[in-house]
Length: 364
Image (cartoon, rainbow, N blue to C red; front, top):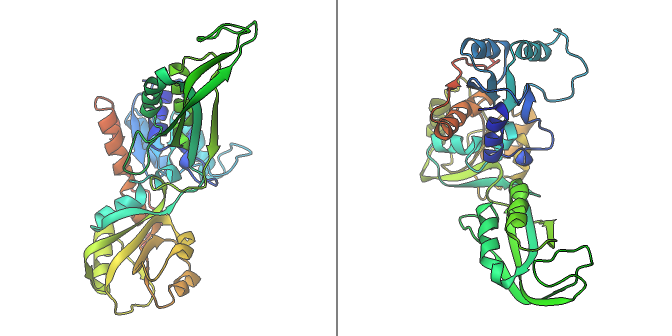
């Protein structure tokens, strides 16, 4: 199996189009046309990870964090990033990063955190904008079901917990082909009027290419009329963070002990304890301070994330509990999640989970 095939599988699972604009995801290093000898999954790409991949005869590293965030102007062994890239190239190892494409996945990083502490009624906390598109097209009435089935199978018409959603209007279509045309209905230079159905379906941006291909392959017309436009609506399928609730409220000390136990956090930095029970919780893996402005104290009792700065804790305003459990600690389960997905997708392929803890932070 070629590396580009594996990249395609990962892209379909966590589309790069769902990643944040600042991010750098997908295949970052390596030749996608090479046959893959094995996959090593890690949270980060370090020199030790490259060495581990070499020892395990893996020529593809699937890393959560990207080793390249911004443009490189030279490749000399003077920074840790450049050293790692040079080592990967010398050993013919490709590097794929998934990062915020998985952060924005409905069952991604934050969902894993919520699962670990036993939250119920989980949903995306900050739905991603600009991710929903709408297709408007026209087909002969007799071909309606065939075309609908094709585009539904390609991913069109999925809204929340529902699929095969569409709106159909019947009417009359008029057209005339020139002398160069080869119409499936009618003749060149003759105006035709037939019964047509207008199809409107909503879909996620990541499925656009395959939906348009399905439309073209299933449509009988030589020239297919269609429109695709962006919607202002947000999607419950993609976005940052998770909000959920405990079946029964717990006190603050029990909540902090739960976090420390489930995330193995040596230190939990938190805002002032308020003597209030915790029921509704927002979790956001990695650096999540941007979510503070979305928090509503009437709906949230605690916010759990990482990399909170001194002044961020003031924003709790004695109304909710802020907890910083550590960056690595919040994302540590991510490689296991990727490993489970690939093992399920490729049961007979060599997929390895790195044994190296890449956390660069130590505690005294």
